[in-house]
Length: 622
Image 1 (tube, helix red, strand yellow):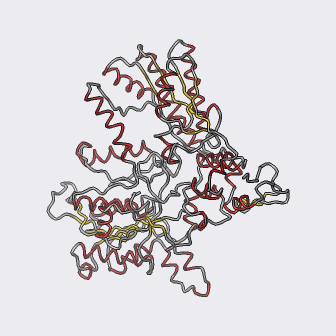
Image 2: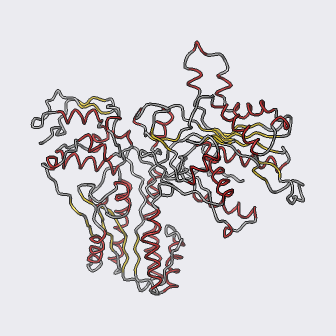
């Protein structure tokens, strides 16, 4: 509940205090009926995302089975906001009856109201009150009506920023004198699995039910439910797409905030972010959509009140602490100068700045570009924006480092760009990545022709560290018919390549194909596919749900394709793998081990019957 501070300095031009206080707070968060319970869960490092059927049956529509839910949802959606408002007033030491008729505003951030289906499902039960229960405007007006306030009453929908914009609007109203205090709320309740399915089909939900905030894997977020009883901008058009924030506009906004508040960035010790673990939430409870900003405020207030910053769950902190930090420390201990630069090599000025910074330490002898950004999708699903994002990280950085080094790095001995087998051999879903890697190879070839050092290395999957290792969790996964190349082998290979004269080299570890591999394994084809998808129990998955609807990305698809071929002698193309269902896999497993199916055999994939099966080998070899 923001209100004017009573003992702070006054702005001379408006006579309105600059400082605003949060005098009371209340909430309903996953597994947390009170803000105190939420605080305890945060500091205990508890994952508030749970696996149960409190909202809908397991694996309905192939949805992730873990999400964040309120402990109990046995009262109307809007009533929860009334309860939270009353508790926030009490927390602020305010008697609700004593502020009736006061100049108090209400701002509620709400994007989706998922109660319409309930109020409208049975025409015989419709009584007219569903119009007020489901109206987003009424979420604010009901609070206004119940407590008899006399200030502005506004429900805002700005998507995932709704509740934080509500807070900003409330602060502005208090500062401008439009009201004396403001009730700020945010709401998001997950009632309709079809809404979940929209996010799932958009590719933003985590199939593992964990928000790995700040993790390079960007495996998606988890939807939770939340209630919580200064400064904004919008991006306009941006290359990232309409659902992604613009880093340039965010940078501009932060600079404006620092300038207007008179605060230096060096004074900031804690930043509460809106990291969704997508290409763009809270790791403990997930991404609360319209209520996400309110959750951030709750986190911030809790941290400030108790002087402790809650832990960020599901993030591999060892990636930050080791080996990079230890290695840098070890180098520095041995007298090596180490500089971590933030210059952006995707622009010519940034590339020049980077090389000049390095020249200040000593003559630049080597440039290695290991940049990687993935936006995998089959060609019919890819976008121009994704092509630009991938292109910028690989082609632009290599091109500008090439141009800048020709002028600023006369002592250069090595110019190395990491390419990929997706360029040389192709990989389904990686047309954009294959294109940009092919382009950087041409840059290295041009350098060789000009008598300059240039080497592009087409790596296969890398083991021990990196995207494949972290995504597939191990060094034994098969990708594109190859196994991850372990780090000692990669370093030895790099040393060999640096001593030869070719512009493009390739390194991979071929996976050994064995038709009898299944005989040495007790894992059924169904369970093998389920393991790749991260599904612990394949029995909970509906038989007619396609693998593409179970969170299968391009890497998983390739692993499934290779596993079926090498271990079960089943050959499918990429599109067929995407269309496979667990029911179809079960049918394949039940076929005669030595006889291929007849032309009358059907394999159902995503509700479409393919008959006859002529282009795949569907027999299981013993």
